Length: 386
Image (cartoon, rainbow, N blue to C red; front, side):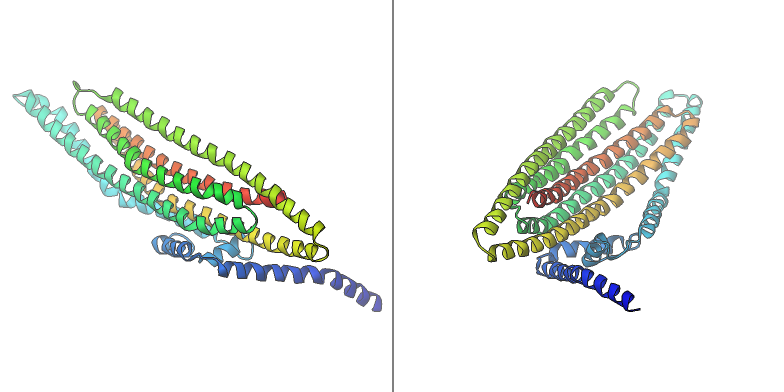
């Protein structure tokens, strides 16, 4: 009995400092979190809960950080259920659009089949063309809605980044990443402003123009601009890829270089304090290491929370657009047996252009996603090189 008690005392004595240190670290992280100016980012998380509260588990910023640190569990099952429910909700919302497309397609097919009954064949062609124009108007209305959704999604993502970056960069500076902050701060903010303005005000209107040309090509057998539409679409794809490659390439290279410089600088300062300041220098260095470690944990947690916020911000608008794509694809598949090839081409073209809007908006999200990831990795490299 005495032997077991002795073993228990020895084990408890060994692990007590670890438990005490862990609690101390948690207290430091809590104090650092309370000191951060995170009101704007916290407000965005609340807005996200308000907008999609029926489809996602509602968490406050503090709860999300605890979840990422492993102190709480995230309801992934509820999230998956909410995403599925939202997609089917959007499909049901667009059933009216499907009904309108099918009705007009049936009318076009009937008019085409009874053209021979008219004494003047032009009357049947005019009637058929008028019905086709009504369908194009409906398609343009849905395309305008998709553009509005895409632009709003880009604006919301910009708001997320503008709210997140000051918090993350402050923590990055606190772990010694001064050079990284000096590089990232202007680079990312300029990239955000340029990319959001360029894609929102230039690229998306170009996609709209390409879609309009595609619709015009299907109105008449004598007037074709499909080649011009295809050419402009290829230009849009090229410009989008070029911009993303340039921005992300510069960001990754500059981030890696800056984090290496920060790591060497901090390591030099740490070595100097330990060796040139007796006793106190070593204590000071160990204390700084503890604070830096806590700042690193908090930075990574807030950074990953930002990634989750970006993902949820882009997820629902893209799903809304893809639900419209599904409706157009379904309408084209149902209409094809009626023999209206021009209408089927029109609907397939609209589905393709709507998909391009979703891809463009997702590309902006990818750019922001990688930017935040590079900042997180930069801080980790800086601490690793200490």
